[in-house]
Length: 482
Image (spheres, rainbow, N blue to C red):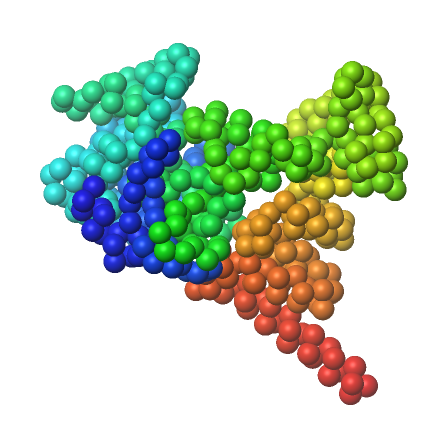
């Protein structure tokens, strides 16, 4: 790792190792909000292609796609992306073309990524693709796999997948056990590649970015510019401090975050938020985010279970809600949620919207106003209303989510900035120009830190803000003239 350490030094970074954490990335100088800490191209990546949706292997676009005529697996949007990928795909194409039609259906994005991993190693060993301090297979070898923590069922699945990869590659001296271990490394270290609005596009392995450890209150954020992973500071990071990002959704109770991290990444978080587990503030926050509300609509208290477990007591006014009442409403919500999910998947959006509105109505009876469960239902409502072009209703729902976003996310969180942006676009569309300017301004304030200012996405947002301001100025001058 000496070469990597030397490569990181000019970037103001250094590697270190901590007990119970392993390798960590430290700031060797001060970083300030909005500064790029590090960026990296993927060692390997694949789009999230399925039977119903395909993307270009080069840029992950869905437009103007043509399938590779030889392997019938990979898609490209044009010759530039095909040329970009050709050194690697030339080998992959030959292997995929040999598979029969049924076997090709087994080539999932994960299988493809593993095949590409070994082909890229081969090309680097043969000096066809250059090796650098931040782009070499040794960095993949150094990643943690957590193989000893994986259950037998998962190990068997990895072994089956490794056998299929071996069958496709047919390389001499290949170690099936190593392939299985690399699948475990993918599970713990690969990143979901998203567009600027955090919609998933594909999966990539970024071995240097993977050194950055998790925190539920991170000082940096990972976003993507195409396939390039970019880590920016969202707080002042003093010299000698550890750089951290979040691996999971942070709008959740400590217990939920801990469970997700343990299941997905096989470690227990000890960040400043998680260290409060069991303390009164943490219990209160968890009860608000994922628990129940007081039955008195005028009370903003949260409920905790009674010692005899027969009901829940409001910690503000002392009113009790019976376990049976909560259970009945929760059961009704579950039944409606199952129907709504089925309707959504079948494309019955009008029926789905009615069901989600009924779910929201029931959740308002039982959930705290700042409940993330209620927030998720409103996010689903917003998504469907946007699809149905019900702009007024969509704006009303979007505005309801804003106070919850402001409470559950830190000030410079991309999801908060994006929600302001959505609100602004709806307001502008509906002619509420002054409100749109306020929302766009709030979006710019956050997203300039998380996304920078030079990407096409940010240029579009800044242009919308300027256009909205020009429109407001024109309206004002027209009123003055009249």
